[in-house]
Image 1: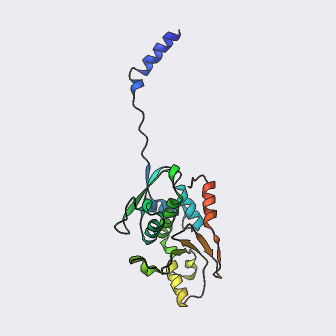
Image 2: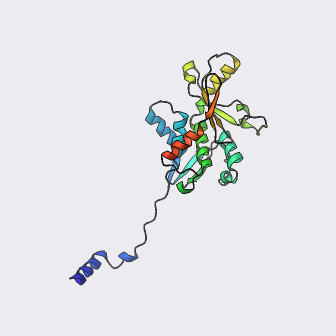
Length: 222
């Protein structure tokens, strides 16, 4: 009976079943960073994102393999070239700020620098209205030794009737707006994010808390 059952099994399987090729693994998903954020913003219906939420959403991109397209700009290029070096230039510099660079994400070898790079790209490209950079005029020129290697994120400018955070800050610096808004200061050369309150006091490095939360959410940060 066992022999008969085995023959019947072989008939059902067919002579070529054992020689069938292994299924081809699915290609990694291709993700545009700008489209990724556009979808998240649509889901939030205008509700602002905190800087911590932006970082955590960026870190989630590194949980599964994918090919990530992101746009280079002055801030991305500065962090990539100054901190990541060869790892950043493997894909080459973009010819212009409108040209995409590509990052192949493999969760088992995703680095802390790569996540921070995509975080900087997200803030400056997808939340540009909230970015303050005091040396903004240098963005189109060669690097200046005395330039600030940080920029700020401030999403409260609308309450004073400004179109973006830079316009608010310029008005504050000129004295035409007396209200000082709290903001986060983001380093372009280190993994550092500091909160500056309305008195101008610099708090502790918030980045370590962001990183710990991402690890707790299952992101393997090396």
